[in-house]
Amino acid sequence: MAEGINYIKHLNGVFEHFSKDNRLNPTHISLYIALFQLWNGNFFRQEFYINREEVMEYAKIGSKSTYHRCIKELSNWNYIVYNPSHNPFKGSKIKMFDFGTSTGQVVNQSCTNIETSNGQAVVSINKHIQTIQNAKNKNKQRDFKNLNFQDSNGNKQIATVPYQDNLKTSTDKNYDDPL
Image 1: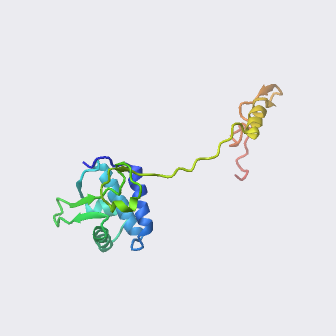
Image 2: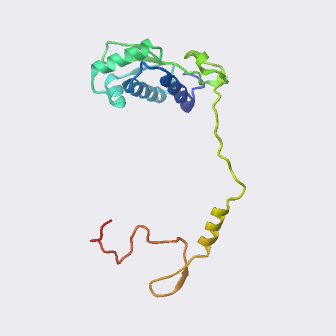
Image 3: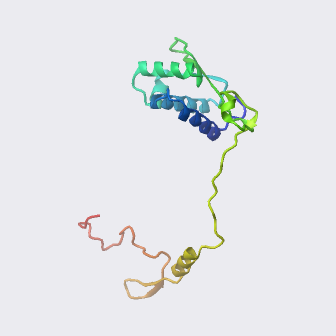
């Protein structure tokens, strides 16, 4: 089992590689994602076996020739290692690479060259600017708490929702009215 594979960090790393690789088309990406999902289902083992029909279904590939072309290209381009079995009962063997996303720090992911790294991936975080108190929302809360209404009998009640029939679920609904 591959150690330290983080689902999200791996996908972020591989999508970064995808964005820089002009050889790829949507079928390659779909096929890789299908293989990644199967790898996840196999607990990120070093190698695992696949069933062509299952992978084609996951990747939404309808042509065997397209499948074989794309899986061979992914292997030739070092996204995976593909060993076809030619045995319909065994399945082909796949090895997936860690795209520099293991538990240690990686300052420049392009330097990992699709190999396991001991570094932690550095991810930029865009924090939202938070204000101490938002007067607009504070007023909404006060207005909401003080909202009063009358029920159908004319009795004054305190509302818990500003407009209770926002889905028009009242008993006197005319179902001939357009939505």
